[in-house]
Amino acid sequence: EAMEQALATMPKCELHLHIEGTLEPDLAFAFAKRNSVALPWASIDELRAQYEFEDLQSFLDLYYALMRTLKTKDDFKDLMVAYLTRANADGVKHAEIFFDPQVHVCTNGLDFNTVLDGLLEGMAIGRERFGITGGLILSIVRDMDIDSANMILDLAQPRKNEILGIGLDSAEVGYPPDRFVDQFERARSFGWHCVAHAGEEGPAAYIRDALDLLHAERIDHGIHIQDDHELLERVVRDGIPLTCCPLSNLRLQVVHDMRKHPIPEFLHEGLMCTVNSDDPAYFGGYVAANYAALADIGMSMEELAALAGNSIDASFASDGRKAQLH
Ligand code: ES4
Ligand code: ZN
Image 1 (cartoon, rainbow, N blue to C red):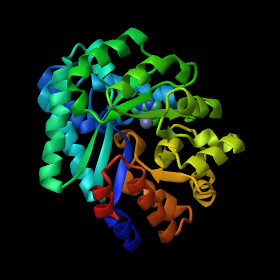
Image 2 (image 1 turned 180 degrees about the vertical axis):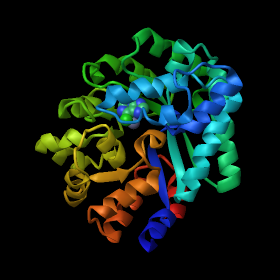
Image 3 (image 1 turned 135 degrees about the horizontal axis):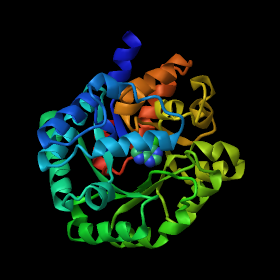
Image 4 (image 1 turned 30 degrees about the vertical axis):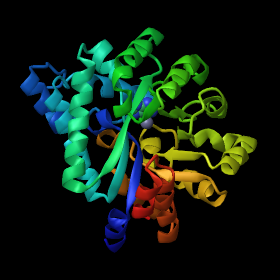
């Protein structure tokens, strides 16, 4: 109890959060109703029975299915405000948030500016209401065709100053970083930060390629760095942050037992490791619950505070803002 309270009040940044992954079943049903979108589940409880995942793909199938309920600017604004309200309760002061515009625009037929306007409006409300700072990271959906990625960058270019960075997500194995060199180079020319999911289900070699070929400044997940000690030493030396997501890893069976999660080891080896919630509506908890899961496997308050401190240092916030958060 006291521990939970302490974990929720520790100032922290959320650096690995997919806004579409905060779409709770009840909110999805509400959006489906107001937008007249037919869902294959008769009730919220029937939907709730779909959340036992075998791997990344089985999760992605549900995640993309529920994204079809998002239609209007207000949907994106409401989704963002709902997330930031929960984040505020968990002590999040700054959030760098992924969105997947290829799916909204190329698959679901929405207007790019509608999506961006709604998300930015939601973030402005979160800043006024809770003082949460941050930005949006446009994530490339790696298993969609490259033309759709290029089209989204064309649409984003006129609004490049309203977006913080580029990311790379979705099905990893078979979609290595080397396919996205041109898109990341273009993002750098926009002045964007670069991050990439790597080493979640994919091998350590994808982490190395994300660093060498995409110039990723942070690695999202990166858990399979445990298989390559030389790479681990390099990432420690260069201070490259990893955005780890313990509940996600457990629910997607990337790790089979929380007691086997490498975060404690990573921290002791000097990795700049952070704790994040990934897709909290799907994985059973927001960011404080991810810290609590680590407390449950025996991490100390000092270690958990070090992880929260890392989240501040690993963020793209200004030095002044970082000093404020420490
Ligand atoms: C994701 Cl957990 C995870 N991995 C890769 N891509 C994603 N998109 C949303 N959640
Ligand atoms: Zn993710």
